[in-house]
Amino acid sequence: MAKSKNPRLCQLVTPFEKDTALSWQREYPRPQLKRDNWQSLCGQWQLSVKSAHSGICALGDITVPYPPESRISGIMRPLAEDEQYIYKKAFTVDDTYSGKRVLLHFGAVDTHCTVFVNGKNAGSHSGGYLPFTLDITDLVTAGENTVTVEVTDTLDIDLAYGKQTKKRGGMWYTPVSGIWQPVWLEAVPFGYIKEIRLTPSLDSITMETDGGAEEKTVVITTTQGEITHTFCGDKTTVKLPNPQHWSPENPYLYTFTLTSGEDKIESYFALRTVTVEKVKGQSYICLNGKPYFFHGLLDQGYYSDGIYTPATPQGYIYDIQTMKDMGFNMLRKHIKIEPDLFYYYCDKLGMVVFQDMLNAGTYHYIIDTVLPTIGIKRGFTHPASAKRKEFFERECRTTCDLLYNHPCVCYYTIFNEGWGQYDADRIYTELKEYEPTRIWDSTSGWFFEKESDVDSHHIYFRKISLKAKAERPLVLSEFGGYSYKVEDHSFNLDDNYGYKTFDSAESLTDGIYNLYANDIVNCIKNGLCATVYTQVSDVEDETNGLVTYDRQIIKTDIAKMQQMAEMLFKAFEEKVK
Image (cartoon, rainbow, N blue to C red):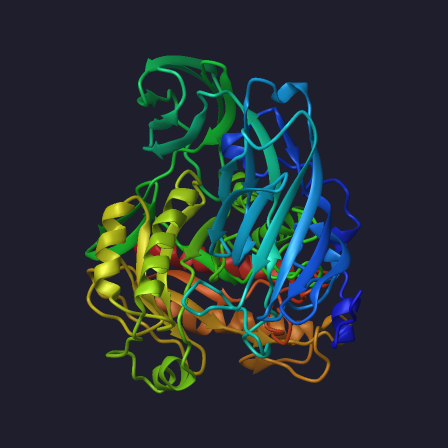
């Protein structure tokens, strides 16, 4: 196994590495379209690397779904631009697959891959963040089979790459490649339900299906018992008696089964709406028809064990529940799409998600950081190639489809701080028409054009003083970034990155509390309805998290964070009542 150039990376062990209650092999990867007949392909695969000058070289076993750059993958090496990874795994098809279609699902593979089953081409995919499914019915045989995945990743900036960079440091992180989300097999009837689309109101759920038999039966579990509803076709609406509304305070989920011919799935939905409404002449984001204060955090989704993928799904539960314990009710998922289980736990535990789209293109330090910091926040865009436009706009729509059924997802960001920004007004208009049930932030931070659902600001280096404009909700979509470095739990002993430095947990807690008490409360009185503090956890050089990168230390006092949240909610209630 290759050794890391940074020995600190090897030492930052998370609690999830020893927690066996949950695992990527046992958890069904897609809880809203769950079937019984499936098998995980996570675990040990054989990994080789291929290059033009040295041919194919075996690297040994890799543990999927961790990227090969990570420690717990067992490989811990970067992929060079002229190299290709070759994954290989044997799997068995038994009698339960007889007379069925066999589907091979990949959560995400970074960036370009071609899949072979028993040596035959099963399909290809490009883009490192979105799932894809291959029908391999005609390629498998009873007994043992082999799947091979060939992967290339050059960090092409015309495609989404998030916070990955070839030269990590500061606010840019270690790049990943290869398989980094779950892989699984599923046996389904030939006339199976390919997708289900769930659109809630405050007292009903509309279900749309793709595939399946003409007649379908849905059985919904409620607090009053089961509701059985049979319908024909691909769309129906079911009224719910005594409706329970989903919110962070009451994350109520309705579970149901849907039977269509031989196919049967388990799923869930929630009754939840998110809209922009005026209250006393000021526009607010409303949850379930009422103005709501979204008290949130920036969430990068990085872990010291598996980098892009926590050792177990417990990593997601830890982050969500720890932030809830501090009084936060929202996470802004920053330029990364997570495995479906992350959004499931946000649904289940009650954590709103503000989801970023996946920026591509060049990030220019002078244009995208220096000029906005000194107050120049209009008039700049970045030229986009035809290839980048095609990928970005298609992946925006695919992201909307992927996350549509998750009640936790209430808000989308298109462009962040000018990074890759082009045609913002046109893209907002098209995406708002495509997905009208969520809030859209066209240009988070700066370089605002004309179209957006919200007025979105980032403030790090000056006093926070904002006043809402009547026609748009006011959102402080990034601020804070206060740093406290816990030496024995830090990635980089030599460098540090943050926006204001503290030398103890007590002083950090006081600094954050005073920032909210002195600045944010006054902004709430001026119409502010959402805040995003930077950030959930330390990430590599960044030590501005509320918890350390290894999730071993909580750096702020939970009780005081709760008091701070109560102060904010009280100020907001007084403003909107």
